[in-house]
Amino acid sequence: MMIVQAAILGIIQGLTEFLPVSSSGHLIVVPWLFGWQDLGLTFDVALHVGTLLALVIYFWKDWVGILKRWKQPLLWLIVAGCVPAAVAGYKFDAYFETVFRSPVLVGMFMIAMGLLLWLAEAAGKKIRELDAVNMKDSLIIGCAQVLALMPGVSRAGITITAGLFTGFTREAAARFSFLLAMPIVAGAALMKLKHVIVAGLPQNEHTPFAAGILCSAVTGFLAIKFLLRFLHKHTLYVFVWYRLVFGALILLIYYLR
Image (cartoon, rainbow, N blue to C red; front, side, top):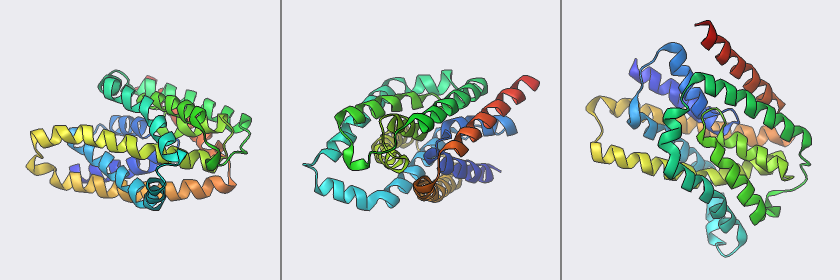
């Protein structure tokens, strides 16, 4: 059963990490709903490694180009945008992962972020492309990314929302969000992997570990591809409604139990 859970949670992680619906929120709520056991830090590492692989595979050409043109602004704008979340994550990640793990808080953040996403979709000018990003934009989006430490907010959701508020098109906001994600996801994976290396990988966790990596990597890649194509012609309102309905259901189930 642990392997099945690992595969299901890997799929959920891959899909929800890159869609604006909160992977951390889903990974708290789904085991809570079904009474599943906590698969532990090892599996958390597997999920981060899987989503990192998805980012590397999808954006490797972009990153090769960015690194080749390292003297040009985009690389340093990405670095600047990552600093706020990197510092906050290093100092407060463990705090937020424990204090904010309540399904009630996840439901509330799902709804609040849904309303904020709706406002950004309605009010954003959507006229700027990725090549127009500047240091001010990068810092605004980077600071907004700090809020993603709270389960239910969504890293992709808050960065895309901030991108829309600064006038970017949906696709440009999503692409910059994904470029910002790679260093952050890599850093999170390395921080958690350090503990696994010290403690070692338990004998019975090899297969769940592999299943989590594979499922999150494959579904993460598909989610990135889907969202960039979807936002080329569609609005974000479907994700707004998903967040509002899902958040309300979480609260309803919690108070009826």
